[in-house]
Image (cartoon, rainbow, N blue to C red; front, side, top):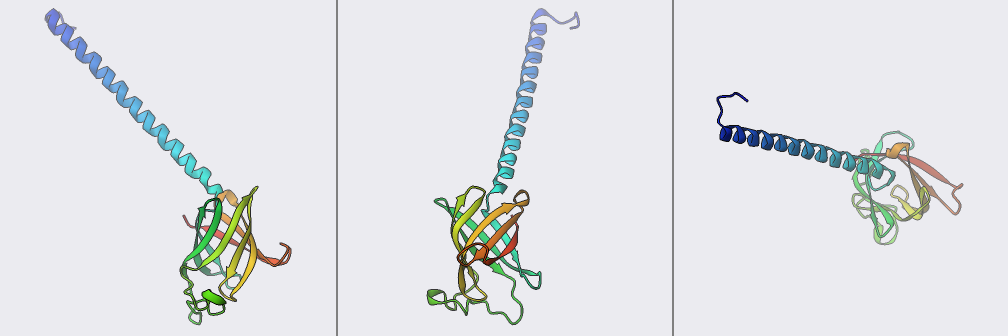
Length: 172
């Protein structure tokens, strides 16, 4: 410090410098802490891609065009999938005309098509899937693949060998 400062001025300047240095360190620590929290949160979100919970798009087996958006949710360890949006062709009905019972002519949007699936290792099994096109209910199992971006959906009668599979794509 310059010699023309009095001892009190020198002490005040020294104290101010120490306070500014402490404030700078505190700010840098806060930025580091916030960055660490953000990194942990993003890795937790990334890890959550192993779960089928989310919004999925299925594709028509024949045309290859999108058919619907299905939201899969989990409650008490059981998965359920509900149609949120449909992409209908001009000749298709927005209702489940071939469904039976209470679901007969029910709107397809809002229809629960996946139910009762429970985690079994890397799969979710023991559930059912409704095909709104023919109104039939099949046994089902699903598994998340490709880093959480794809969902293998299998509907079958009796044993898994007698059925059909689709690959759905994660939307969110």
